[in-house]
Image (cartoon, rainbow, N blue to C red; front, top):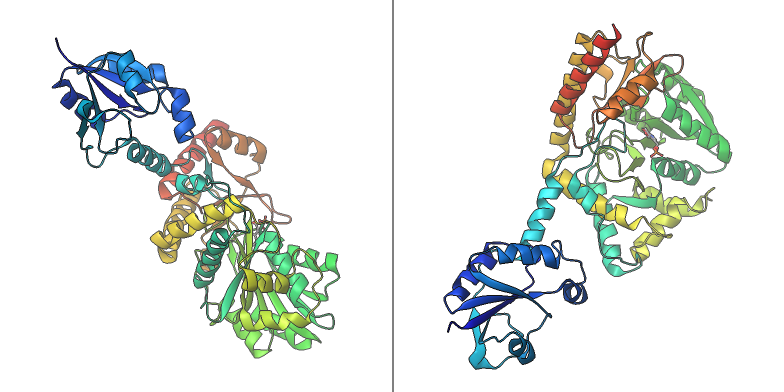
Length: 491
Ligand SMILES: Cc1ncc(COP(=O)(O)O)c(C=O)c1O
């Protein structure tokens, strides 16, 4: 009579390691698989197996080395062997089954494979998957699967040191993109990008001083709105939303203003894609001893910025644009020396007080209030991916997409509002032909997996296409093909 040999396994994800084990065991007699039940797996490992007991049983029964499959608990003891008339038990060298030695055969495991390894491989493949939805919006932008998945973490209290260390790392990495950590630091907030801009404006301008805000688009306008709301002393320098700033005029205004202490500008005006010249603005700030505030929301992480060289004291950005992270983290990068001086400036906001947030983080490695925990983990992964690609290469990728876009637009007979010389190559504001309706265009693209964005230029009927995020020129080519089809149907 052939011996009855039990091989106990949970085989939640069946792989060649299992097959090799079963083949070897079959040399000793008829193989009876002791298959761990779903309940036991849940109890011992904490998850529902990917394949249910019945599914695992069906697969195992069809393997030629297997005679029978029976349900077993996590650990096999003499009682189980007796119940199924088993002569020998086969297990890997991690055996903890309680059976007498003369009935036990230990086999080494197959190197390099296990359900855990397979699960990790599946996660990796999943992470490499491209998003089905292409966001041609100026943020949130299309993210990688690995950034999406990075949000799935064990629950953690953000007051734990482990989480503080994650934020410290994020803060330092964010600083190093544009400045030296010795002289500059990054202050993190939970909030959208506007929170960072609002934090700066409400925290840094003393009661008896004034900020001059360069307004050449919706985001310059927003800085004026924020200042208005909080009663911050400001003057507005209005400039064309599509033409570069007239620096002579700007200098004249600076000269005339009294009590001016700060100058504020949006680097890449996301309204149009007009790129304001930070070198020239920084020179003016230095010449007139003004602290320069830059809203770099849609340039940071792609377009090179050097805070020290460009005399920038405070810079605002967020997690969900060129960083390709999730929305919810807003941050201010600032010169430490300037932050220290804020001790003597009364902030107008409680939550967004820049000095208090900075000081608290310096002391405790914590934000003052609950941070967006999972968004931070996604941001950490997004930074890892930015470092892998490199800021320069990221901008090259974006630029190639932008060139593909603008060449394609020209072929389609469409015009964009800012000339190439002053363009950020990040977001493009396109004139909507009179016979087209934005909502209809939007819905057409949305159904095909592309999200486009409405325009924001006063007195011009425009829509916007951003070429940031985890996309490349091929996605833009596909977008252009679809656009051509749309226009053909309209004719
Ligand atoms: C230049 C600029 N500033 C500020 C913001 C506001 O950011 P949020 O919508 O995340 O508050 C944006 C958003 O697009 C922006 O492009």
